[in-house]
Image 1 (cartoon, rainbow, N blue to C red):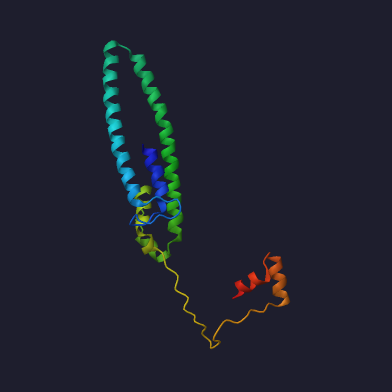
Image 2 (cartoon, one colour):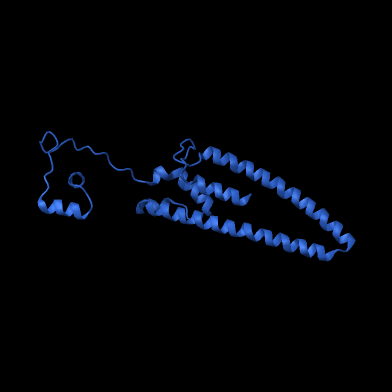
Length: 180
């Protein structure tokens, strides 16, 4: 159950703060939170049931004097938990790497606002919720032909620029568009 939560947390990395925007294959934050809550409740019920049945089984075996069976069961349980531990560590490192990549995109002046003492999954949620506040939006292009030209003028490429475009694998039109 814990690895499912971490996996869902990783998938929900790009959802909006309101949980209403769904871009590509991202999961809305509200749906993500709902699934996490259901998974948490199911996991709690499962753990309680397993603990109760495990305790009663151990008592029964102790009464019968079957210590070897108890030791074998403990070994099996430890081995099965190793796979979950490995999966959790992998997911945590993936979330950390994603958080670090997103933090690198934040302007240096805004990085002081990011809480670095949060666990990776909480930091990911915080970044999702506050991403629009942390990033700088590009200024609108308001150049309405300033300079008195009154319109667009055709870009004329020199022979040297045409040769450069061919070497770069571009057509003359693509290079002219780039030059504008």
